[in-house]
Amino acid sequence: MREVFQDIQGEIRGAWRFRWVAMILAWLVCVVGWFVVFLMPDQYRAEARFYVSAETPLREAMSKMINTSSELSAIAFVRAEMLSRPVLEQVARATDLDLRATTPIEQEGLIESLRETVKIDSVSQGRGRRGGDDGFYLVSYQDHERSKAIAVVDSVLETFKTKITVGSVDD
Image 1 (cartoon, rainbow, N blue to C red):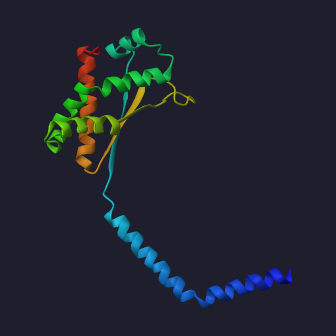
Image 2 (cartoon, rainbow, N blue to C red):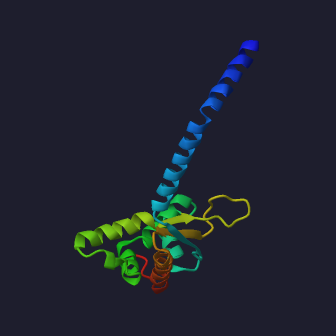
Image 3 (cartoon, helix red, strand yellow):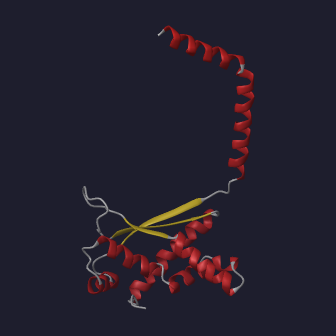
């Protein structure tokens, strides 16, 4: 036991002897960390919850095409409808994201980027149920410009609402 105490005491003395080196090293790490954080671009995330009612053409189409008791298939159907190419093209035009792409290849990349970054998930609003298909969904998007993030989410919802209101669910 005495040897363990002497070992601990020796480590403390050694640390005390190099305290200034440790202090300088800590400050260097701190300054480098601040610099890295300062250089990181801002990321803004916008999200909105929405409800797909049982009376909408989308729910009617879902009940005909898939088994709505399966949460995953319902989410996949809503995601596929909201992230279809025509919807994403309208979103890009409405939010001026298409101005970022000048060539057709960049335009295609923009649409694919939107498809990957716009997230759609099921949200449970029921009592005690987790992840159930209550008809509530969450759409979110992240961008380095706050106004673009909000505009994309708003545009996705408006375009989707227009699409199911008109009844053109089947492309």
